[in-house]
Length: 93
Image (tube, rainbow, N blue to C red; front, side, top):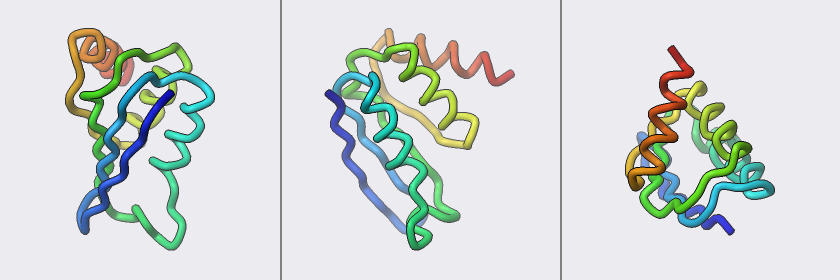
């Protein structure tokens, strides 16, 4: 299960994730992160807090990588999560 909390501000959208980033919740994460209904996130920075994430599947890694390529910023997380994010950042180079 993945809990996604949305905190909208004028200049950014913050997503606070808690739980496991696995399918089918990866689809929901993409939908929430990329939704542009009525320009809800147009022109704002997307920041994803991974502090409460406990596990990431291969599908979850692909979802995070896709968001990273689109310009999302990430912070938080334990040792495992930081290793995954480091590996994904290296893929971008």
